[in-house]
Image (cartoon, rainbow, N blue to C red; front, side, top):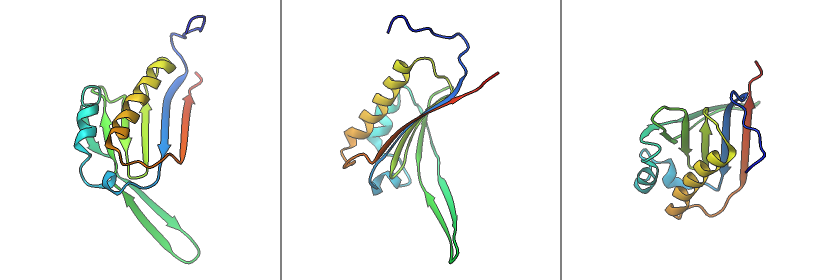
Length: 133
């Protein structure tokens, strides 16, 4: 896109995309799907668990929960794709242009779509965190 100014030191510190979907139990298993690992291995060669622990305190009870997530990281660890049983998240701390970030999102969504297990999308969000110096 022409005519748009690109700032040499933009204040963006963190950008995240998240799509949530109905639960897909195989995504919550101990190992990530092999086809997802293969699809993302070029840009995201590092794979590590990113388990989510929750604690809910109510009047009647305290509930604990845990969700296994799989995090695919870039070599420099500034961009990641995280797959859980109910969500896909793409995050970066090295945002350059929307078009580049959108391409990363497309790559991650295509890898999940190829698994053929997600029945629909419940919510999609895009979050930008700025830093004012």
